[in-house]
Image (tube, rainbow, N blue to C red; front, side):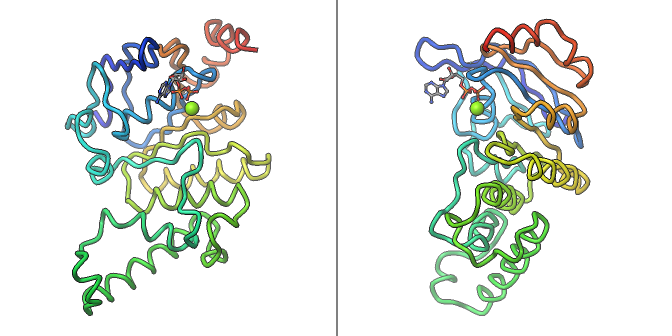
Length: 251
Ligand SMILES: Nc1ncnc2c1ncn2[C@@H]1O[C@H](COP(=O)(O)OP(=O)(O)O)[C@@H](O)[C@H]1O
Ligand SMILES: [Mg+2]
């Protein structure tokens, strides 16, 4: 199994943010994760990516427990993410942001970097070349020299995806990637996610725009108050009365 989550539980004080979650993801899938605000979706990504440790349960990625190891090691194993609230290096250029993303896959030591050895320079050139490829892949090649903070919102979201891809993930976690995008940008993002999957990356997508998540996901998992209340194909989820109640109940 590519990803297996068993009995995953996370409290914040008296609040049960994730309650005994069980799920699996197969390699190559695009899985949508939906649920009302506060359902525990981002908490799940925080556990998967090692930002938090669970109180109970296990996360097994490619036959290895990852629920007790450090975030950078999880990244090195092939799990990468974007954030609901964009987290770019605002004062760095778009290109530099993607170059930073690659550091977990590069060899040069700090000493070599300081001494600017020829080996270091060669690696630096390779990193820059690959960063440009990734910028091109997300449609931002012409904006490589702009500061991240000066980019329009939709571009910042795509830049975050490029940076996440720079770690060469096997599993990509996208937390509301269309937030703040207009419908045209959201549509372009759907094609980008499909392109990412075609490269062999498995995608877990938290998404609040129903049109996007229903269109792109092969399977959808629904959380409500930290519990999984439904799972199935988009057309099944759309007709599921528990899901409809969960959404109507919050409006
Ligand atoms: N670091 C934290 N400290 C305290 N409470 C948190 C923390 N992170 C999330 N929560 C709470 O956990 C619940 C689930 O939050 P979250 O996972 O962000 O939901 P979602 O992403 O589905 O909107 C919410 O009630 C939220 O307030
Ligand atoms: Mg969230």
